[in-house]
Image (cartoon, rainbow, N blue to C red; front, top):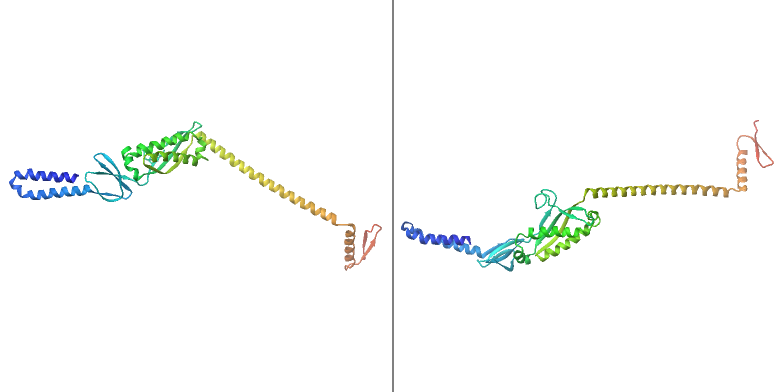
Length: 301
């Protein structure tokens, strides 16, 4: 449109100014040609639109948004149409307590109240994109600043609404995934109604009050001490069992020995010993007493 206006201005100047100035009349044909060229370039530029990859084009005619969407590539359109390009690639919006990490400058973390009345701080990243087919409706109902009108306020509100169903300790521990799934479904429904697709919701950090932190640390330390004591008791029990088995083995051994050694066995062993002694190199005199107890007298005496 800008080139068309320039071309018209050149034609007007050529028709009016050069007409009253004979010295410049020879430039009149050139001025007309230049003006026509600008107008043609303007018309061509207005008729041809290029939509880049990851974008869609929304047609606007005299302020009225058309429902059809232009995909990526070259398009020939009515030169009176204005094309609004909208990004349909994945976008992210981060709300963080760190100064330079989020989309907003300064502390932008989400502060919520839990069911036990404690304030918890949540850092969050939202991954979303514009649904191409719904781009005209989004532009018509919200405009192109949907990040500030939809993404940010809905996310913060839904998180606060759902946090009241959980205790602070649960958000930090066992029910963190459940909480994340719940707010994802809640936000996803609202985004879908407005032409946005929620791809992922990342709970980056949950900061608990200092009193709750101390309580959790105390609980963890107590659990670790209890596990350590269980281990010690188990080792003592195993050692006591080992000693019992050892004592039982010794007792069984003694019982077997006492049971197996009869008087006949002892007498047999005694005879064997005396036989070996009698056959030794040293002369011996063996005198058997009344009680069958032998008396050994050395022959050298």
